[in-house]
Image (cartoon, rainbow over all chains, first blue to last red; front, side, top):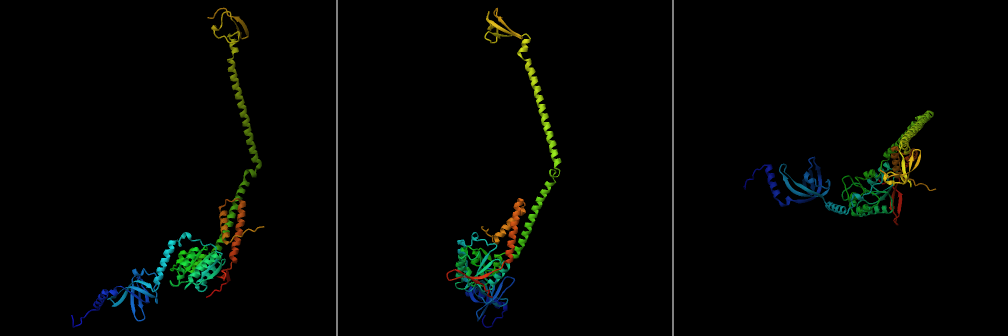
Length: 402
Length: 78
């Protein structure tokens, strides 16, 4: 309706503008480059910040769901690229960028490079658990491959000195960021192996941005750590920072200070263990000796030792008793056998042919000595002998037998 | 006479722990137990003395021109 301006409410104005913006192709999906300021995260999990470029400012919000994909911590002053859409919130009349993705300017490339190298080395087996070597329990010499200046080396020396002064420390100075740093670090690790400088290597640096830590994401450092026959502890940055070196190392420490704690034992604890061992040694010996004493006492108290005479007398009585039993036993056996013999002799006697002869029986034999047992064997007129109980008769058969 | 190679700290600790376990088992013959005890006591003295006297030396180690190690005391820089 032309002519008179219509009277609208603020929310109607807002809705009108919103419909404009939501229809606009540019505003529906854009990338904005700027510097973060007024950054705030609320308990709700939503992030609020402003992007500015010196001449203008754009309010932004990143909701919790989208913020979960953040791979870094946004901070005021950071140059970033925000992706999302611009619309207006009629309630307060503010337009803002609803950010769905946020990357630090320039660092996007680094993230990609990191992921790609990590994938490549993982497939090659550089991170394999089976390749990792154990850390010596009481290292004699420790090589620190790190910057000779700065808090990291100071902290490590302080903690190593307090915990385990018995270890000798050799600082192999290297640059830990910038052009050529990775080559220096790798060279130092390889040289340490070549010259067998230590039985443990700690390599790392203090905290910093991804660019600062980048040397420890380089392939040359990873390969030097993998090839190292001396065990390597990686100690890069702070707890959430993870570098490729951390994956390859034989042991990963969250920080340089943590590395010093992992590398050596606490001398106080070892002291206590030694004192404890001393008690166990003594205790073991005391037990052993009292055990032997008890056995000795038992032997000393036995009858054989305290009353030997009675003991042996007992044994003698027993011996006598047994020998008497033996003799007695023998006698009985002999008598029994004698009786048996007599009985057998009597039976035998009863069956003696001589006794039979005494009862009137005679034994007839032919001239040649064979026994005459049948009348058929004697022809008439044939001579034969008759054995009687007291002698022999010569006879002749008169008639044939019947 | 050939001298017996002294065990390093790690070796001494390991042997000491072995001896203590053996003695605590209690089945060693008495003579052997006494010998073990003496060896254990000696190891104990050595380990505690090494701990007591330990003085950490920190050096800066670099490669010389011929690749040979060059060592000097480390000046902690703040």
